[in-house]
Image 1 (cartoon, helix red, strand yellow):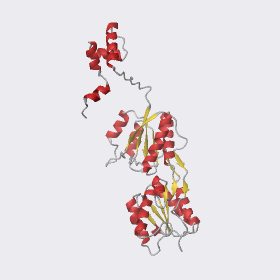
Image 2 (tube, one colour):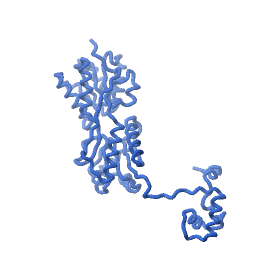
Image 3 (spheres, rainbow, N blue to C red):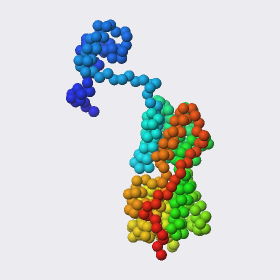
Image 4 (tube, rainbow, N blue to C red):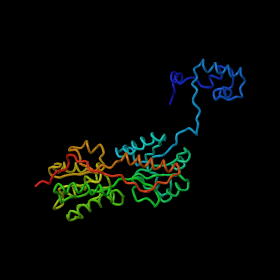
Length: 347
């Protein structure tokens, strides 16, 4: 970037300009600015007068002992409102604790499963005291690297079950899947489909397990063709919905394991001329802002994303202070938020 003369003037004179004005060397002027004792009184007077005359702004010296501690937050992406809610929770908790946060909007898994030296080396170089991983899947070598360098870390909603002893924070996904399905059952639905995320992710598997448990408790037959996986992708959820609608006996209700996928479900239903909830009921999961903006507003299971992130940060802070959490797994409760996308099945 090219600096203009006016921009330079606004920034104030440099130390070299002050030294020239006082008739001394730059190192001597620097000693005066930094309060060093090895300067002659007359020289100190000339430099001080030049500093005042030119309006030199003395910058506070960096004191590492007083500097706030630094933590890293590694997120999958900053493009979604899901990540925004996590970042908001970390920010609030970090502010209360006097911490600074560095956000890395990328997973740190390389093709060969080894730690990416660049990011990990920077973590050490900038003096981070700990790391929060959001929706991350670490390799064995990455876990080993963090352990070797004695860097405390906490997983927020890990993709897979972390190794024994690793601290993680998540939501009560099984209970959420159960609650969503029980709500649809209470309305009179018995042909209830589920559109899940990835087959192997912890949260998706738990939500589907809760769905199946609710059906079993109600004595409703589980239909394998009613279980579809869309990898938390809105466009894939759209295709899976069309597949469900093409079944000989299509469902009258769909439990969708994320609000973003539910938007894809809405789009597919509209293409077929079906109305929500008159023709088919839909329940989502997350309670993102998109759930309120949808038309009709989406009934969904709220997982407390900001609270999960804040809890993870507080656990990390205790670990940074040398304390081990009483439990390695913390689950925060979910709850159903009823809006306008569910109703009794049509005749």
